[in-house]
Length: 97
Length: 303
Image (cartoon, each protein chain N blue to C red):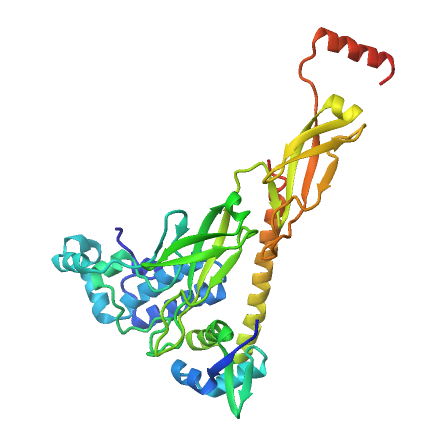
């Protein structure tokens, strides 16, 4: 599936009431990916849920970009562990009568 | 409809100051924030309660009304009036097993009875203070289907917030798997895209098969004489029957693999997992006189 970078970063920042510097930091930490098309940075629509989640962490809980990076890393580990637990439960189920 | 003790939810008493409320709310909301508790419906529910408690207690007018009438809300005419006029909320429904997800917009019936369905001006964790939302809210829901239905790609019509949507459920979907239905979440604001609908599947298994990914597992009973001398027997696969050749001297718990007789591989048309059959040798529980005599002869022959 091709990724469509069709959301202007400036439009996104305006509509969410955030400074572009916050998004710049998230890009710097490789939490968000942008593509520059004709000198204008764009976000991929597929990435919106993740970007919005990271911004909520900042706006709702006052977490800075460094903290967001750590949380994102830990959340990914939580999700991986949840998947592993689910797979193990599924395997265990084979041995239950 | 039950009385909701907003003070208890925030771990406070009714003498709490605005500073106490703010502090307690921030502490609890951080702990139960849905973004920090992925796939945890309980945390989502708790977060809603905390938000609702804060919505009421941090607003002096609402708090006053709550303190005055809270426990006696059923007897207050104005509350009754509000209750009768309140709109019924959306939510998901369908013919079978589709449960409401945990979208985070709804308030308890108690709240809506007392204050109506609209949010006030107090600052909630989510979306308040932000007048424009680019993308609509994502909805989460769960859907239970039978394992037999998961064997074949099929279509199902669901009703989501009053709208019918027809989805295709690919064969081989797994228990706990989530699929995304793009654009069927909450409406976007200011021309933005709609949110997505995420459906997590729960597979109900009433068959004799155990499933692990695309592989199936099943026990098959083998008569003692067939296990010793060899032979054949017929058993059911998930969607047909198969003839098994039992080798002589087959031991208890011998496992055989029937390639391609398992469950469909998700989104790989025509590709199937394997069926693993474990032989369970059936010991006789009763012998006729003749059978017993024959076993005695076998014993004499040192078997």
